[in-house]
Length: 171
Image 1 (cartoon, rainbow, N blue to C red):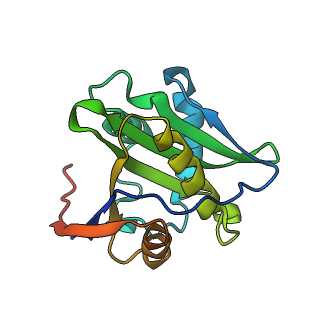
Image 2 (image 1 turned 90 degrees about the vertical axis):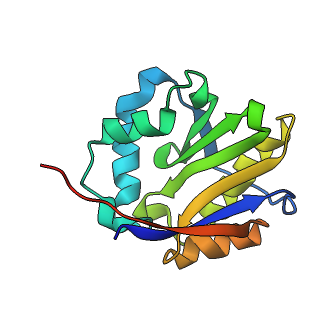
């Protein structure tokens, strides 16, 4: 068993919050895969997001999986920086034909957790979505990741379904 995933949807945004001074978001490109991999691995440390999969896949495979076949999928990907220290990553994918976005991943390194920076990341995501011609956002969250579920609830995400996910390591 990997996890029970809750699939959530947001169709209306929460009220605006002020992004803390010193926090910025830098867009990513394909040339940033090494940097992205390093920060992703930092965000996985003591993460409650599907911990049973940590270490089973190479980080480049994870990046390629999030990227998929769409070369434009990275348009909404960014690195969170607090006072010039890279502390997190946001992988937001846009699907214009489906008139929705998918929050594929948002993660903070351990030193950044518990400081209300998750809310700031969600505000950045809301800002990005406000520039799109559609507002529906979906995501999947590990049912045991209580801090993430609380954050998403605060940002008006509602559970639409759940699914048991399994994984088997192949040699």
